[in-house]
Length: 433
Ligand SMILES: NC(=O)C1=CN([C@@H]2O[C@H](COP(=O)(O)OP(=O)(O)OC[C@H]3O[C@@H](n4cnc5c(N)ncnc54)[C@H](O)[C@@H]3O)[C@@H](O)[C@H]2O)C=CC1
Ligand SMILES: N[C@@H](CC=O)C(=O)O
Ligand code: NA
Image (tube, rainbow, N blue to C red; front, side, top):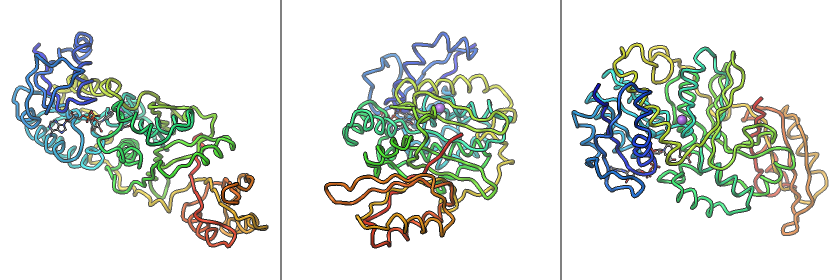
């Protein structure tokens, strides 16, 4: 049988990795796919010193989508503009698409999948979430018998790398971010990593395939790691927790929680010990219980591993009846639900609060009464010595689970107290049982 011809568009970190893995493992990949897979064209602006592409014609990316010889277009340029045009063009021309672009899928996926269905082609996107971890496949296929209750993941490698290096080696935020960029982990615009946008893109995708709802990135709550302080990391540790940047999606009767934020997790949970660029996703289903998927969330070859697996999947499925393929969003397109995504004010969580108390008697009692008036129970309290530089006394509280609106109210009341200085630091707490 003739080999399947693929065109790689974008020859950066992931494109270069994909080219190398397809070449290096060509024989084994062909034994799995049932046919050889040939990189017949590359769409790139420049070469990649880590790839020997001397035998492969290089052109502009849109030409790859127009090349009648190409069966599968692999989009690895990133962003929403040229990437969107390229993907839509490829689909229009009847080509299958593999992409690692979570921004594109989270924001334009509904439109892309509709067009792909119309044209009877596959758009595969395993590399878009948690890099090399086959989490899309696991949820979409491996857990298809379950009602998924919730999922929670460390799904940004750059952010986790920064938090780990800061905690373990005392390095500064900016210094570690620079290293993450040099290693090819960070997005072209690294604010996507550190402000939680990249994780929210990924969480949007995971929630859709877990709960069978359309992609709704605009409804995801997004908070980054830039406001975290070393003091909070240390207080969390003293209370038996680790702070991780977590994406959390939970189905409740009222709606779906879709939120990305720093989170205290009990230090003895496996996921609390996922460090560096590693990612992990917990998925809790009614039949299976809790599961945990772990692996490299970013980087050249770990991400290429997922891209190439998608290519193999597409090759195996390209001759099948489109009606019998695994649906893009796991559920049949006419069976997606309109269960709403909840605003963050309606989401429920426990909370870590750090209050900077002036050294007045009675502040703790006032804070406790603000909480109890709103029906918020305190789990534990830790009061530190007054800090030398400002004389303020850090007071750390952990609450039981409560709707966010109530904690917002309580924080506003605390910030109005004479004995409280500045803003109250609030970090959500999840037990992840
Ligand atoms: N780097 C990583 O670890 C991961 C990246 N991704 C995603 O993979 C995609 C690619 O990311 P990276 O490889 O890291 O980026 P990169 O910046 O290393 O590579 C992108 C390449 O595309 C090229 N490019 C951009 N626009 C182009 C155009 N119009 N024509 C021709 N070439 C063009 C750039 O010159 C660059 O060589 C992004 O969507 C990213 O979010 C997903 C998972 C992990
Ligand atoms: N910038 C992303 C790359 C992978 O998706 C990350 O750091 O996780
Ligand atoms: Na993946």
